[in-house]
Length: 261
Ligand SMILES: CSC[C@H]1O[C@H](OP(=O)(O)O)[C@H](O)[C@@H]1O
Ligand code: HPA
Image 1 (cartoon, rainbow, N blue to C red):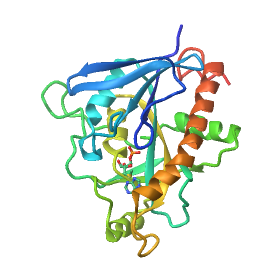
Image 2 (cartoon, rainbow, N blue to C red):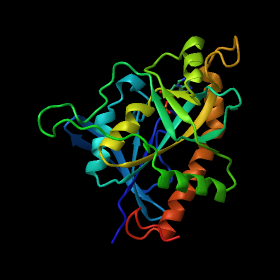
Image 3 (tube, helix red, strand yellow):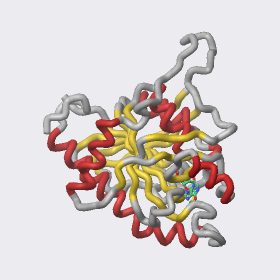
Image 4 (spheres, rainbow, N blue to C red):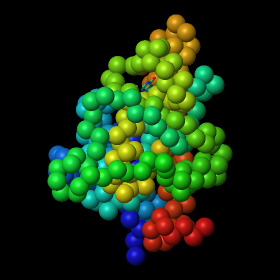
């Protein structure tokens, strides 16, 4: 029996997955609109790849079709979603280029369609638990993969999601820091919450590409700086994902419930 496809959901700096064999692009229709996906195999493991801003980075973070993407992944038989996002470091000890394996989130967005359970009469009122929104088993796989290739990654961090597309003000970042935020981004929510609502396991690797606003007083955030960090950081993330997929292809026989290592 083949394992379910692994969903890989990435954004800024990740517009294609060159490692995929037999890659083919498809448009998947959902109740929330159609979603472009790339299907293929990686180390023999089926993969469904989605680049959340589109292949030409044409969709800003507040307009990403989060519900469509998560619904499309679920409809394609994905059980596990490995997300990648790039972020600003709220924690002043974080350096650009560091990786964080997230374990919590704080939603500071204000105008997003954030649920599949809209009280439309079909499923009643549903309240989904977010205690382990970043799946502990999938997180362990990320941490083990990073460790196997000697790639440092911080175990745990709170992703604070802002609407964007503008960067935050220093005061917004100070507020997020007071609340225990580790990194700031614009796409992690409702991605993570919708995955939980859809019953998918979800975990995320965050690549820090700049100190968040005001963390280095007076220093503006520039796209040049971010692109420079991405150039060296993206291969580090891909190496971790490569190792995770490789390990799965060796040890995982039926489903991610059946870890045989
Ligand atoms: C290029 S900086 C802002 C941009 O980068 C992050 O993208 P993603 O979460 O898709 O990795 C952030 O959320 C913004 O969309
Ligand atoms: O500083 C940031 N804030 C929000 N999103 C981001 N994505 C990269 N850097 C940042």
